[in-house]
Length: 521
Image (cartoon, rainbow, N blue to C red; front, side, top):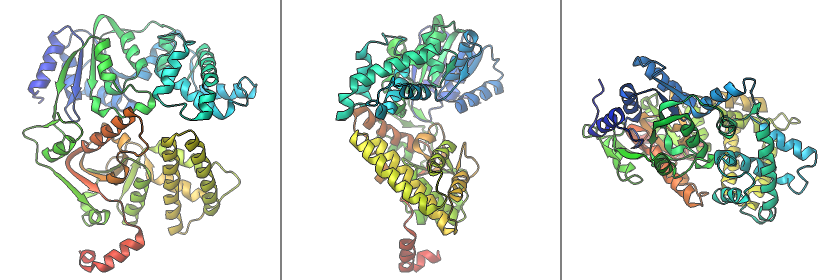
């Protein structure tokens, strides 16, 4: 039976009897989903709960059904799904094409509209168009107002090297033309368009008495405007989230989202500062990043400790579905995964789409079939990518390329150990270690992908070398790096363990020879 805390009870009471809109600032593990579902059952009118992704939306739907809440009283959806659903009422034959803008950009290059001097910058042009949609360019403000585009460029540091600066005006002009062309093709939409085009075309939305936005700290401008479009005149907006869990700024999410939502909807602010997930020792560590998070008085003490990878393996009964290994980067996770597999510890890395990106890279050269050939190609590719992004001062892109190649190298080494030498073997290994929604066995995950999940035991892999990212240079990027560390720490329900990466195999053997007692243990 749900017994609310004083803070939860205050929110539920305000939701039931009040009239103002509310932003609910909830620390990690504060029971926000339980709280809002309890409030929904007691609120006046009908409610839409806007979830950040499909998985969360499905979980909320299941809980509403379990609690006997009729869908006419309350429903849950992602912002993209609800946008598309309403858009189809006006454009019933609409088709989704993920690469809509990229295909249009390529066509403009082929017919000469995009001149040869801009062809090297087409990826920047497409990225700028995507960010313009996230920032509602054309919905608020004039598409032709270059100052709006310049603000986006400055915020995301898109033109941070001389060639781009020299071509900056031309790139913005071409992005404006590309956005207009994309907007004119109303029957074909991409992921960004699912929210953007219904607002641009001012379609008639089905509206609700109450609009609840979960994970509101990750909202961008178009998500805010969509929430407004879904709200009846005189309706109430509820923004639920934690500003210190904002980690998706690179996608166009607004780093000041909660404050902006509060101002836009004239919200009353209410807190949930007590975590029901984390034990006291973990909360104490999390206070390094968020000083106001509190442990519940009944919370267990928990533990915060440090282990080598080899020490972790000595107690392998802990390495099960109740545990996760988290890391800022992918490469250390893959190294750890193969070390675990060699020790016959079942595990998977969260994120099948990461695996798909790896497979796309290893299979891009159709003329080769062996790992040695692939190794040479990857070295050349990394050198070219590094030169390309360093010239543009895009160090995050350099990190991404390095991480991708280093990850594939780990997989190639594992293939060699098993006396496998073909690229098809690399692909098979990738398919075997990457998965979605990993449960029941030890989960390995980047911190970004761990958001919204929890485990009894969390091993934080290679924290001292990966957090914060040395490539975070702008103020908002540095803030989000701190947020990432807070997210990682607060995934733990019991134990939080700083984990050193596995030693190189030869070194591990030598160390064990020097420490026969530990080896015997």
